Image (cartoon, rainbow, N blue to C red; front, side, top):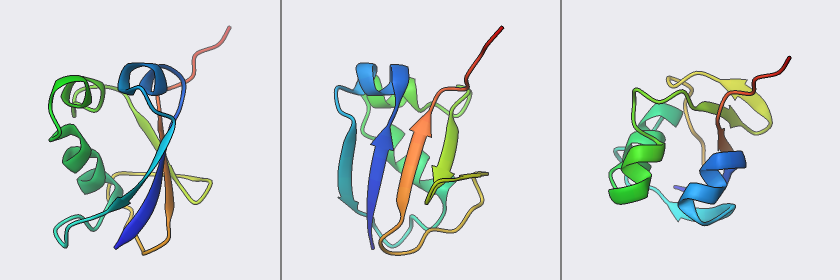
Length: 85
C-alpha cells in the first residue's frame, strides 16, 4: 500500500524532510503502526516518533487516533502538539 506522509514543525526540522511517499509493508495497517514503522528507521526517527513523545496525526486532513486504519493513497501528517497562550 502506498501513502503520502507529511512532517510539520519540529518534526520536519529533526527528520530533514517535509514529505515522502512510502510503500508500506503488509503489517502496517493503522496510523499507529505507521508511526512505529517509521520510528524503526532508528536515529532521529526513533527519537522524534518514539511512543512516549507527544505527536499528533491526521489522515486526509482529519485528526485521528493511532488505531485509525490506513487505505492506499492516504495522506498522513505527523506534527507536534500546538501550544498557545
